[in-house]
Length: 211
Length: 222
Image (cartoon, rainbow over all chains, first blue to last red; front, side):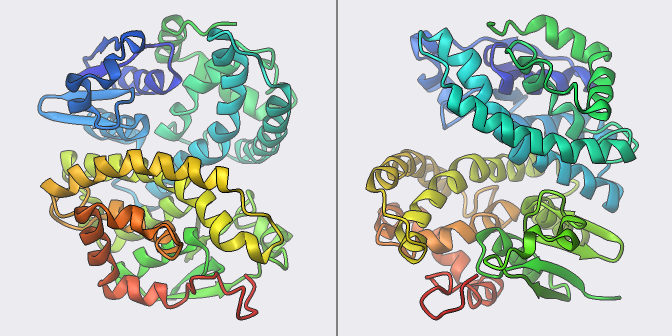
């Protein structure tokens, strides 16, 4: 399996976490944005929107990190999706969507302002950071209540929903807001548990978020 | 078997996403209407169903689900698994890809246009043409990819309709009611795909509950 993109991208490393957890054999093929490689005909054949990550398994070309993660899980570690069980898979789907639409939706602008903008010589818009920190704290309150009742988000089993949080949360640690989870003990325990996983340790080493 | 319950307001494009899948699934369900302007979604009884205070929420027996795409997947997996290509590794991956494309590109681009072109006038918000234009530009860059895709297959994930197509319905419904429908019409295969969706009984049924002005002009404020 081939994963195209740079490991500085949290969308790319979202897929690396899934690939590692699934125990799949894969290689990361860097795509050079500086030379507009992502708009080259070769890359557009992999992802017609010219973005990363893109993914290849034999003749199958996929894009969108969460779709890639689902495919990898379905193929190599279907237990992460629980698709044989209607209720459990439904809870996985709910929390997969919550990750995208609540958690990462609030975290993305913070990561962009704190990590990406400075990388390109821009400034950090503190107003955007503050607004989204407030949103994220409200989300974390819900997570705290959930994780007080269940070991993991979808239930008492690890699922792709938990794993999809890892790459963006690793980036959060490189911002001035690394202690954001401290007031939420169950969230912190959940995160510490994820951090201890070999797959997550490997991805943490791979990522080079700028601070 | 008790019918499924869907909580929310039928004019919501997110609600529509869930409803069209329920219709396609042919399953018995009832809408439990809620009032957005009345703040029903922020009341404790609703927060008990969805701690994020949003709609739609689906109740199926003792299972309570939220997030419209999660509801869509559950309903289809239970009653019409071919619409998520269950059991087909490559097919289900393509459904997932195009559901994600819709989530991160289409909804994000169409909603600001809809808010400014349709809703704004009823809620005292000035129309911001710059926001509209910015999102139209994004849409104009997305549609050629859709056009190319729909030139080689009838639907987004292949030659059969799937959840990926259905998930586009709600936001497309309102965008196509704005003065900018021509932006989509300019792409013949996208237009044909949209017309095919509109012809489906499931879509027509759900659309009947979605007046193009969200109900504002007739006093049915959501």
